Image (cartoon, rainbow, N blue to C red; front, side):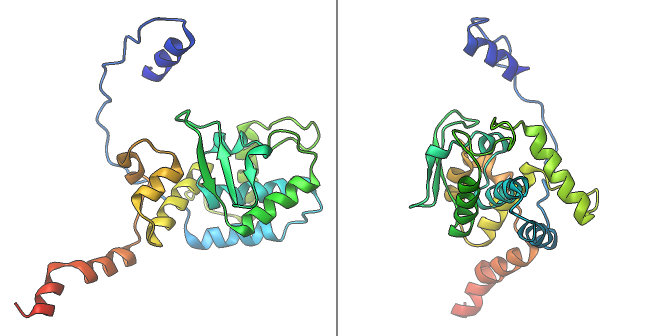
Length: 226
């Protein structure tokens, strides 16, 4: 409701947001799950073995690579413009973002190769992710349908989600587990504050154990003999 009124203020329909001072209701700290590694492996084996002479399959491969490699939001992905992709630096400038602030995201050379192959094969004029037949930007429901088809083909259990947002959570968690700083993750995800970023992060139990073994006070006591 607050966001809806804020939108009306921005568009000039109303002058004041009557809900601006309403506090958010308290909520349980529910952990958001990531995509398990074994299913990620299955997904990438699946898309890498698609017949990419079929342009729809090539677009599917491009989207999934970008989702995991950049942590980009679904609507940001669907609004990427080809002119804002720099293959020399393997970076993409996002002009359409949730925060309305432009930001730069990066991709690996492997993903950049997939994206370039897709662009070269498809008659892309403005937006990267388009309907192959019409050339128009696709709707978000098409992306959900694509991922649902992948899930069905791989027979992934119903309790395992592979939604676009789960790819984003998985990107953030994997970066953290691999040693990335919270500030790096905050900036690449496009969060305005670190507390939002922290809700996305799920350290593996093995990583937590190793961190505990390295940094707990007993380690220092043993090392100094005090």
